[in-house]
Image (tube, helix red, strand yellow):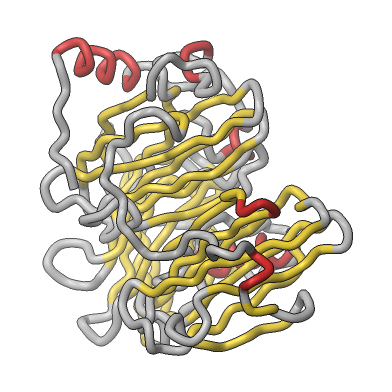
Length: 398
């Protein structure tokens, strides 16, 4: 991973861009980007399609929160998004469209714990969200640019690439909605054909292999890549319908080329994607009864709730009657590894944490206004485990 070098003018540009949050706008990326920072310092300078160079920011992540960079495109553009932590920082990035849907996620494709992804996007407004892998504080550089502009990271060589003979030489996958299992040594490429415009979802599962997916279109045109969407498993969501034609999928493994990887290709299901976001805690569920949310009532001073945690988030809500400090802990006493997130009733994340202090327990502290808050807790490492949830309310002394 290259060291980060900045001239004084570049540092000044970084500080200027970091000082211009998009506070006056609403519903950027479905509300997820509200309060984010324009990567170029303001909206006009954040058009990557026409930018004379890449745009870059120095970002500080605290308390398990996300740092969100905003950018626009005025025409279809081949872009690259990257994040490189300083010191031992390990960033994870998500790229979101204007409605808040996740286009791609990445953890280590930049090399040495840095994140990197390349894709082609239509004109519109987008958000790149960055967070720390372990939920701890982190300083990092984020960069967004066109693919022909200078990269921040070295990237990793994962093999892949389109087959020399074209997509037609890859192993036929079969019908959409099915799954196939094979190691990278056995089947490094799959092909599938679309007879009509279709949005697709592609997954690769086996954390022991740590799979990476790369999708190519007709003519071996690069379309998308993903590593570490859900744990070490990978997923590509092509939300815009793909044109009819033959596509090929390169499957590589960062850990074990001989481990079987289950690949699934099916039609994109927006409802399934949303339910998956709720299950992982990456979006707040609605309070309309469609998703189970246990109402804990008004938080007067202190309450305790025991949870049988699993890999899917268990949701709770509580009411805060006056402005004050909300403190929530997920305590497992070393018997499991809880993960914790809190949203307000509009779905804005106000805190997220894993592994507070020297142990595996989680803690979020946030100054809040009167309102309803949604708390999610799950097992970070999957499986089952007992978790004790503690919520406390503090008010300003008079």
